[in-house]
Image 1 (cartoon, helix red, strand yellow):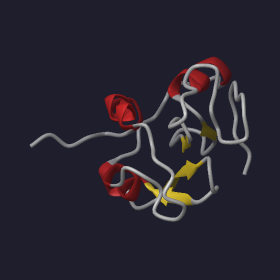
Image 2 (spheres, helix red, strand yellow):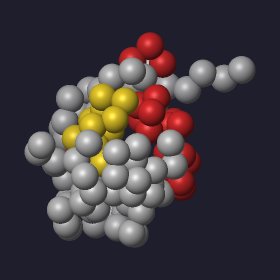
Image 3 (cartoon, one colour):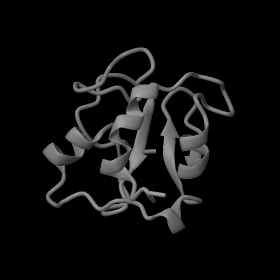
Length: 106
């Protein structure tokens, strides 16, 4: 699986986010390419970010950098860790959900 951006290790950490828990890459809806973060996308892609729509949350668009399992957006948003290898994800990534995902407000 090819990951684009400023990657610094084989678990998809990048120059922008590189804590122990920063181990996911996101497939962007606009280009179908995996990037570690929105900053990598902004720096390396030649187009604006297009967010995933709620009707698309069953698409596998999240890559666990530890075991390379692809997860659906829904599974990722509901899980604090990878369901396959149990590596823990950075819970602060939720702050960036509005950049990647069109969220429904109740």
